[in-house]
Image 1 (spheres, rainbow, N blue to C red):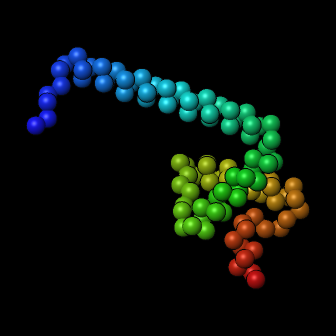
Image 2 (image 1 turned 90 degrees about the vertical axis):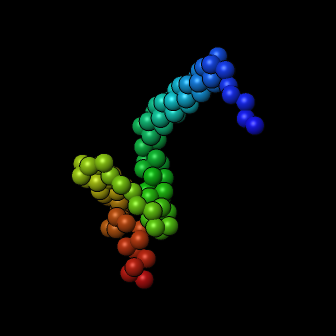
Image 3 (image 1 turned 45 degrees about the vertical axis):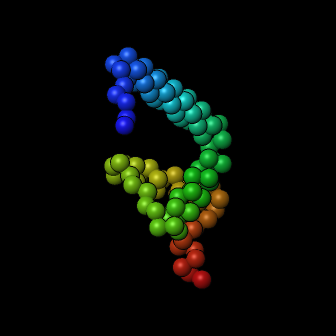
Length: 100
């Protein structure tokens, strides 16, 4: 038979869970800030890696959901920037494989 928890034990567990949630949230925020700084300092490399991850996800059948049309437009402008800076004429790596 399962023993009923006392009120103080339940409060202690809730406080511990809340503390862990706050720590995780703070870590995610710090990680996001660090990623934003890295992406600004190493913009070309970041955009290349982001494009690779998107292509990998799409090859696995995973879709990138954009919060708005502006996000999709932003992605298009990013990939266009990468392509033009390299002198590529293609934007999507999957398009290249279709032509073979």
